[in-house]
Length: 249
Image (cartoon, rainbow, N blue to C red; front, side):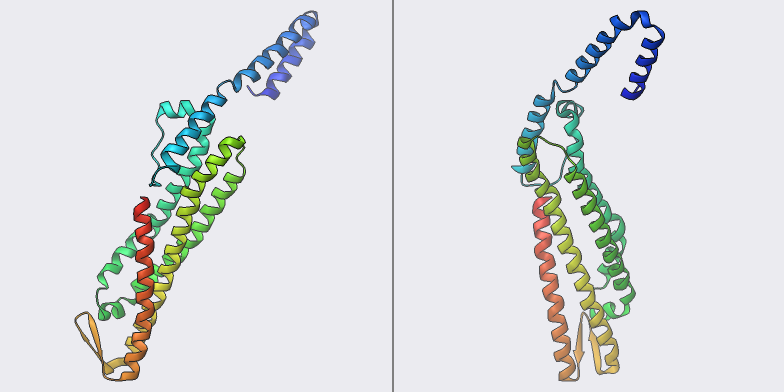
């Protein structure tokens, strides 16, 4: 029964039983005071336990993969369990956005292991790029939703300072790396599509030999090398970001 209904019920009872009003009213008020006082008895201990967990398991650690809390930990953290779930919720949503939306198309791209395959499989690249753009939109939504929830948290100053560090590591750091990955993927696909269209336009002026392509005109070769340089640069940056992610997971 919520407080409004409880108050209404007490009022009706005291009105109908006026003879008991002077005796019962103080008892109900006293009971309510005891209830309110009892709600926060364990808060200092819960805050201390949660703060220590954030410091030792997240801030001082090298990884960002968060384990589920045990029932004992949930009991020890009390209402602060919800604050922890904000962090795990972000990680879960981030993983889902990448795995569900991009896994199949990224796997298909592995078959594009030569210049000829890249030209013939242009539609696979287009599909993957479309999915990357969709994940970019989804990621922005996830980050905004998480940031709004974080801003709405009511925490004591001592916990707030520690939680901010954990939030920065789990949400801000992961979010930034995810954004970098998507931007670089989008740029990489742009380069691949440009090269694919360029090679197709050359017709019989080029010849495919295994994984490479031979040009009969120097100007065309120079243009290809310039586009390929941009592609290689994006791939190197992707590898660098991937290494950072691997170190965190």
